[in-house]
Amino acid sequence: MREIKLFINNQWVDCTSGKNTNSLNPADSTIVARVHLSSAKDIDRALEAAQSCLHSQAWRQTTLAQRSQILEDIAEKIKARKDEFIEAEINDSGAVFRKAKTDIQNSINHLKVVAKQMLELNLSYQDKNYSRPSFSRNEIIREPVGVCAQIIPWNFPLLMAAWKIAPVIATGCTSVLKPAIETPLTASLLAEVISQTALPPGVINMINGGAAEGQYLVRHKIVRKIAFTGSTQVGKQIMQHASVDLKRVTLELGGKSANIIFEDADFQNAIEGALYGFLFHSGQACTSGSRILVQRSIYNEFKEALLEKIKKVKVGAPKSPDTGFGPVINKKQGDSILAFIEEAKSQGATLLCGGSRLKGLGLDSGWYIAPTVFEANSNHRIYNEEVFGPVATLTPFDSMEEAIGLANQTNYGLAAGVWTNDANLARSVAGQLEAGTVWINEYHLLNSGIPFGGFKQSGLGREFGIEGLESYLETKHLWVSDCLKKPWFSSIY
Ligand code: NAD
Image 1 (spheres, helix red, strand yellow):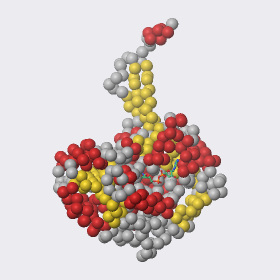
Image 2 (image 1 turned 30 degrees about the vertical axis):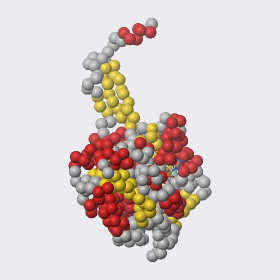
Image 3 (image 1 turned 180 degrees about the vertical axis):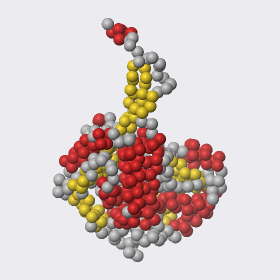
Image 4 (image 1 turned 120 degrees about the vertical axis):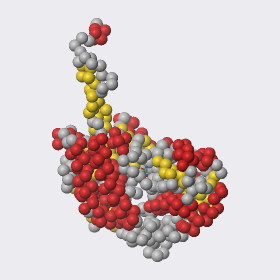
């Protein structure tokens, strides 16, 4: 069993709290790793390491090309240990084999995309349009924002860690990353990989802990930027903490995304897209298409076909390459999903399938929740709140305007799907949806080179792309005077 200590200055160090906890396999509740819990003193130490590295010549003087090469090296080293990463991700997070394999590959790809895209950053340039000859030369310099506090959830453990460390390394910042306490394993393998590259000690540090440790980290005076991925509720608290020192913040939060199916859509693709939309990773995806809106003319046929297809979902042990649907992360999440289901029933939403924990066939010691669909309307809480489990609502609509109104009704705005063969209709709907990503005849796919993030209460700022990198940079204006006569000085005499 792996013991996960704290990763500070490229060294594994014992926690000073003397406390530890176990990370459990969601499929069978066996212990996967023993995790050292950080004390306040440990977090201080990690942040001090990040701060002194930020000011060190070894890190300050690295070029974009050198930092890009380091990201490439990290990607290649993960690739060389791919199978080990996949196995660890399955055991620690309950991801099914196919998801874990894709996640590890996507993590490698993401690091490589950032390694390439960062070379487009213009970190220092002379202004040509507004500088006045013989008066001033005006230069724009982009500098690292400073020490970052980065916090991630448990649904995509390595991928989220890769999304966070890549812009830090690209822009010359430093970081203390806190993986979710439920899933620290692949982040610890990533730390091991990092320590085998030319990345100076102190650029990336990792601490272990839950809400209390996360809160201590984000409130710390050393921190200049917080990059948080998690629930909207915690995101709001983090923004409040950030306001005390006006820390920079990017937030990637929850969602309640609509998947809108028009009558002219490719029927089979739309059925499969709707199922993939809300059942991928047992619904534990921020972009989960948990509200399926279907045009009334095909509603009944669609409902029947969807319910029939759900019966074919392959539930089982995550490590089997055949399994398509695994457990949710733990009892707490399972209980929360079941409570949502009970409330929906009590509010009069019609349960069409699922609605309970799955047992038997070797599933008893894991937290498996049956794929669940409710026929519901916008008055039901299940229609508006993020469940973060394999639960969707099915709702008919009559017109494009009604579909858009229903889709935009929630406080969230992370993503949406539109299924139609009419390109004009698709563009018109996409243009009116309040969502950071809109898929047309597609679902869940992300592109590491293109900004990702949420409208409304699904987040603030963007990850990925040049926009994502720029959120780790400050802008400095360097004014170089070219004139000796300065009459404005005499205005105060
Ligand atoms: P969570 O907000 O409870 O926890 C997320 C992380 O924050 C964990 O590491 C946790 O330890 C830490 N944390 C908890 N309370 C904290 C506090 N008060 N201060 C500082 N840190 C704190 O979320 P979760 O249940 O782990 O993850 C599920 C949520 O994450 C869902 O809402 C999901 O939609 C969201 N999510 C969003 C994205 C995105 O990119 N938009 C991606 C994945 C998950």
